Length: 219
Ligand SMILES: N[C@@H](CCC(=O)N[C@@H](CS)C(=O)NCC(=O)O)C(=O)O
Image (cartoon, rainbow, N blue to C red; front, side, top):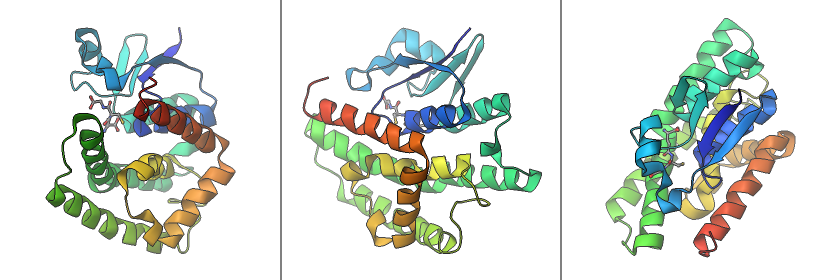
């Protein structure tokens, strides 16, 4: 039975899963969910994830939502080094993954929602939200910037799930306007991932193609 992954190709959260699955060589069946048509809020989808959010994994009777949890499940299954190569690396990978969810990606998500609200609902961006998000992104990016001055990757000397989680906000930075370009080491790390991780470059193409079509109203 195949592992189904539900999501929209324009989603940076789906990208974390499709990238990791591709690197690990795990076969997945992609189940397309059109987020701009509200397909993650149908009664059928809400049975999979009551939050109406994607991506979602379905592997037989196992259903998992939250991209990081999905990636941990896939990496355990594949016994992958993306989880870290030693017990202490593994804890460090988890530390950065939790940090990424609570202190990092959330602020780019706020900016994305402000952009999308303006684009599709004609709702002007709320200055206070934009200011809050930008200042939190700058504070967190400063920490990443100093770490990446001496490290090629977030943990150890190879790509892990921590890099994938922390790199995700770059997926929508053209839309969010997140101030990443103020942090040269962060930009260089992102460029390194694009150049050395083919799956990260391929999924960027997918996101861009889908977002261009969504914005121009083609799909
Ligand atoms: N923390 C979640 C975030 C999931 C999320 O925000 N997904 C977005 C797409 S990137 C979504 O499905 N949005 C649908 C909606 O808000 O209706 C994860 O990491 O999986």
